[in-house]
Image (cartoon, rainbow, N blue to C red; front, side, top):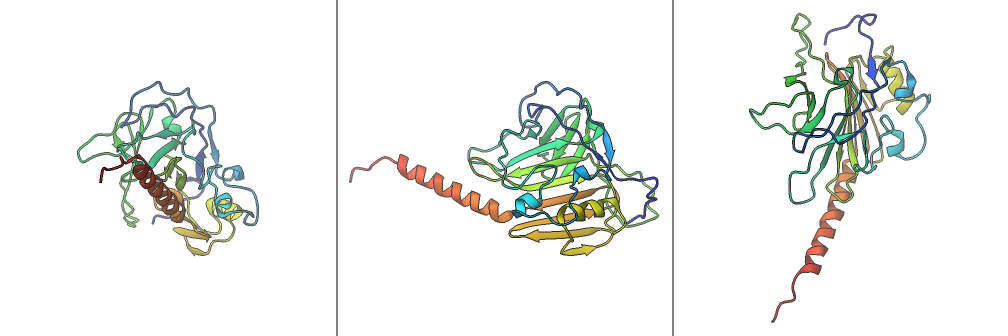
Length: 264
C-alpha cells in the first residue's frame, strides 16, 4: 500500500445528516431530494465522531460497538435519515439502507439497490449492496488495491457512507453496520487508530497499517484500510440467525393456524 504524506492527506469525516429516507430507490419510486445538508466536513481528530473515552465503555457489546449512534439490534424501520431499498420478494427480506456522508452527495439524490449485469447505476449517489460499491452519476468510485507503489492511476475515492443490513424478521433489526470513510492508516500514530482505541479500547488483533479487530460476546468489529478508503465493519451474525429462526417459526405457526380443517 502506498505510504501517503500525512500533511497532505488528512483523514476527513463528512458528518452529513440527510433529511429523509423518501428518496429515489433503484427498486422503488421517485420522490423529491432532501434539502441540502447543513454540516460540513470536519477533521477526524474531532473525537465526537467515534468517541472520547480512553478505555472501552461498559455495557453490552452492542452499546460498546456503536457507530455514529447506530447500534446492532436497533430497528431498521423509522430511520428517516437513511435511504432504503424496496423489498424484492414475497417473503420477509433482509433490509438494506444507506446514509451518504460525503460532500459530493450534497444536493444529489441518494439511491441504493442491487445492480444486475450490464445495468447502469442511476444518477446521483448510488450504493450497490451486492458489490459494496459506490457510484456517482453512474461512475464506479472504486480503485483496486494493487499494492504497487508505482501505480499512478488516479484513485477514485468511494463515497463516504453508513450502510446497515437488517434481519429477515418483523420488525427487522440491524445486525450489520459498514462505515466507509476517508483514507488513513492503522498505525499507532494515526488519527484513525487513536479514535478507534479511544472508542473501542485496545484491539484483540492488529496488523498495521491495514487492519484492527475487536470482539465481545457475539459481536465482531473489523477496521481496515486500503489505498483509497477505510471502513469499519460491525456484525452480530448470531443475532441475525436468532431473528431469522424466530420469524421462520412464527411464519410456520401462522401457516398451520390458517390451514383449513380437512374432512377425513
